[in-house]
Image 1 (tube, chains in turn red, purple):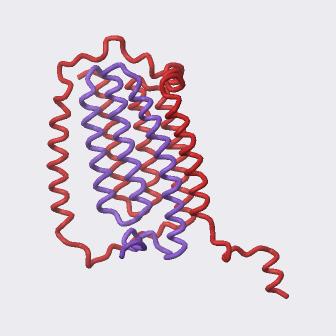
Image 2 (cartoon, rainbow over the protein chains, first blue to last red):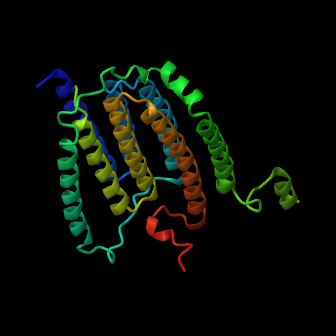
Image 3 (tube, helix red, strand yellow):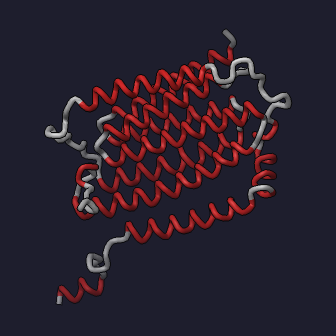
Length: 181
Length: 100
């Protein structure tokens, strides 16, 4: 067993354990911290796949942006555990678990044999570095990158509009003074 | 490591764990996190296949997926906050405003 495979198994085990932690935690805040660990392990796996730029982006956007956003929302709306509704609990989850395990087994079995004997690309991936990714991004994919920019702008405005408090709820200083009078 | 098969298997496992979380949990925030996990497992598949074929297109695709995921999280969490302000709950079973 080569060292790289051993390293992969170690990181993969941590990754799967963190994923199970996300799903099985009672408190949302524990889930968010497990999610952070999961993202960091995925960044390590990206580096082993010669994708250094994406590893950096993974840490910056996911670990630094999205998890922080989720933590802020948990802070805003509280993290009370959600009680289950006993009237909904049936034998459904167990059937789902069995079918899911069957799906998992067939997927892993198929995928484990998918590239047996197929050699990796002869040149290797020199392009994981920022320069090559940037050249591809801004030569071949100029239109998609601009559409992504528009999408992010629209999402920003949409999030502001949706999360804004209705105008009648906002207590301005003037209305408070008027109420005091 | 020369083979990408273990990476594909790992991403299948993570995807199914995330799907199980989406289907079984009731807290909307945890469902969001599980959706993020599923997106990330697909990213891992794309990066692994990009490595296999020595082709950068997979990396570009992952970049776009990350941007869309960021937009989705921003809007989704805003909807969650707006809903929580009305019903004071994050239970996914309470979100039935559009149910007729």
